Amino acid sequence: MSTSLTDLSLAEASTAIQRRELTSRTVTESALTRIAEVQPKVNCFISLEEDAALIAADRADDEIADGRWRGPLHGVPLAHKDAFDREGKVTTAGSKVLDRPAQLTATVMERLEAAGALHLGTLNLDEFATGGTGENEHFGRCLNPWNLDHIPGGSSAGSAAAVAARLVYGALGTDCGGSIRYPSSMSGVVGLKPTFGRVTRYGAFPLSWTMDCIGPLARTVEDCALIMRAIVGVDPNDPTVPDVPVPDYSACLRRDLRGVRVGVTVGKPFNDVDLELAAQLREASAVLRELGADLVEIEVPQIELMDDLQMVLMKCDAAAIYGHLLRTRGDEFSIAAIGILQEGFFIPATRYLEAVSLRGPLLRNYVETIFSKVDVLFGPVLTGPAPTVAEVTTDDPTKVNALLTESAQFTRFANYLGTPALSVPCGFSGKGLPMAFQLSGRPFAEGTLLAVGHAYQCATDVHKKTPDI
Amino acid sequence: MLLPRVAARNFRLPPRAMHAVSGSALYYITLIEMAA
Image 1: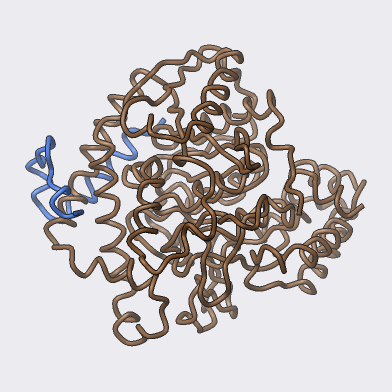
Image 2 (image 1 turned 90 degrees about the vertical axis):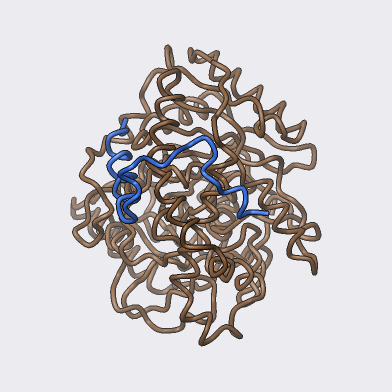
């Protein structure tokens, strides 16, 4: 019974709760049962809040019975990367340094609570979201539910692993260089990095002021659309959120793909992927063509430059944000986190300003070059499936960095430009590890990405497979 | 090496971006202008 309930998508669970075919308590109890079984193996949670979640579930059931249904997230168990403040609770960001209770609640947490979503706990991440492997010296390594010898990807490792393992119906993550899409791809879930400024960051732990984004990870594109709808919108506490109209993302899913121009990325570095992944990508693009999309091969200009500039912004922002803590409590950081965070101290201010100043012109060039020809870009998220833990466990951090840098070349440019991108699972390797394609769009085109991703999922069943754990 | 590769290469900084703070403002304006 518990397995079948946890296998429902968020949308399916939501509908059953709304119709009172299931109670929120039943759904929550089955999620907690599964967490008790799987958490010791995967280690995706940092904290669990069972009692509070069950109380909230009973409240949701009472409200729904009273005819006060709040919307699709009402009574649905979620959990989130430990990166969002809730008043009185400690937001660790995967570190031991951030040890004080928060003075406020992040807007995204307030919005999810107002939508009636349940909060089962906080999810594991690479310390300060600086890594891409799910390794955390303080809270233990998070593992890939599809194969425990492999990493789940990071930095939103716990978010991806918890959704993939069917412990929660959705989760929030953060993405500064690929930290939503990277683990989504490796763990076989859908992950959306929205446009910079689309989702308020008030109360969220920062890694980069100029690039951080908050977005959903869920089993289906439809589920991501439901979570997005609850968290978007202007926030008086976050002036970086522009008053750009927000579409009804669920309505966007009904868009027909006939005539949609899909740009299949070719040339360097997009052709340098694992052979199995290349085959899966060809198959996935063929599905889009069968659905009526027009496929066009396209190269992305200046991708290597944008990749470099993203690193400059991220490293300088992070060093500035955590400089004081690094100087005063540096011995409490892991070596891996220090390695990333302190690099920003050695980048000249002129380089940073160059990276900032080129952002507008490069964005304009990117949009005018690409989106005059196509509506959406299609390509890889990573160069291949998830590496093994052994491959990323080495005394030589430069080897791990090289591995991650190679893999993140497809994700970072969207952070530098601030454009939206969606990771959609599209198959499995011979070893049973998930692989994914990435859809990228022009600013605020989340609806288009969700439409294409949803159409793909309606025509395929990759997302219905569950890990045997 | 990261730093030498960060040169502006084919892109010349526009005159208005020579003002240090205008880079981020210019970016933000462009982001909204380019909205779908």
